[in-house]
Image 1 (cartoon, one colour):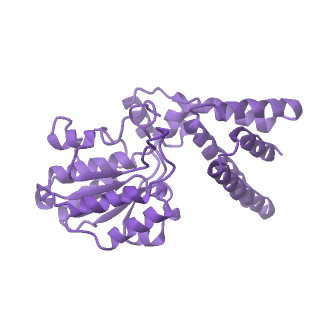
Image 2 (tube, rainbow, N blue to C red):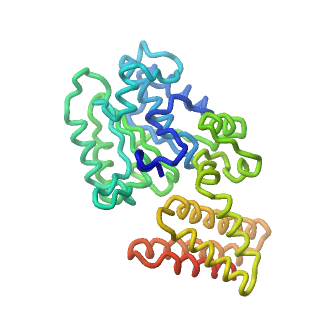
Image 3 (spheres, rainbow, N blue to C red):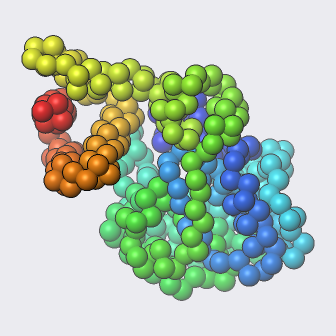
Amino acid sequence: MSEDKPGVLDGAIPPAENTRLFGHDEAQAFLAQSYRSGKGHHAILIEGPEGIGKATLAFRFANHVLSHPNPATAPERLADPDPASSVSRQIASGASHNLLHLARPVDEKSGKVKSAITVDEVRRAGKFFSQTSGTGNWRIVIVDPADDLNRSAANAILKILEEPPKQAMFLVLSHAPGKLLPTIRSRCLPLKLAALDDHAMHQATAHLGLDIDGRTLAAAQGSVSEALKLVNYGGMDIVAAFEQVLSSQGPTARKAMHKLADALSSKDAETIFAFFVSHIGDHIMGRARQAALSGDIRTADHFARLSSSIGERLTVAQAYNLDRKQTIISILGELAA
């Protein structure tokens, strides 16, 4: 993660500062037209895989709304934000009085980003809406992502969504909307975004100065954040090491396990560890789907249960601060078996 921008990957542009968005033309057109009609929903659930531009789209739309507070005279399309405009400068610096970005806060003691969006963060939204806008403009809250809300925070957000203030707008982001409270989903207008196609991926990564080959492009699966992890965080090496563990036996396999576990449990390995957890999840569910499609329901059920078991084990290990290396070795041993 970037040292001066907690929560932002190395090589990425913070969404609040990003003036370009690649792909999602239909979603952009829908937001612009919906707002211009004056009948836009007060809460929009922008959902889709991680790293495809959901936050950039949210900030882009917020910039559009705050730059054109009268829907009837707003442009029919979302344009690239003008970095020189006062609205863009305020949004980029986090100084806008009309926009609040709710994300996982930084722990003052450790300096690391917390594991969840807490109820204290949501209370900031309540205070934000209670203050009268000096310009009479819209008040916009971006929840980024709502998947990170803990239970208390989710219930607190729900209360605001149930009785939204006048001229208030929520842009709720989610990588996995099925995990959100059904009551939150029911109060939002869903806007589904797909993973980026190859053309948009090449444009987006080139915009970041990232040169990706065909193998990396395939592994990234339409996600710019995955491409950054693969290139800037050694993700391709982690994938190769994992494949070696699965294809080896005996002492060779044990040596490969320990080497991979050392890399994933080293200091400042949080980003690549999260990448690894996601990768093994995809691997297991891929095996489950493959078995199900071939009619082997018993094996499919086994892998589905294994996915759940590993998820629970990782959650317990994090909650009780258990030795990460031993947890990883245990999981790798089970997968290799």
